[in-house]
Image (cartoon, rainbow, N blue to C red):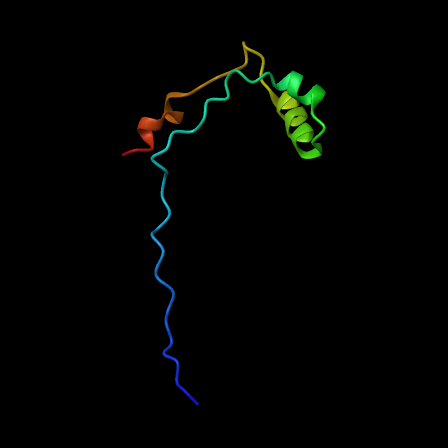
Length: 72
């Protein structure tokens, strides 16, 4: 019976942010998407987004939320 040497899996690189930018979905009409999708999960997610979407006068961004504070 031949002995086959045991090999260990190569260590994976540690996870980190991708250098690829995220796509810009700012122009997506979520209301229209929710009304016309046949995909059950996408429809539920769109409906949830619409239900929790702040009005223009309620939308708030704080300085502490900015990306510069996460980079230090």
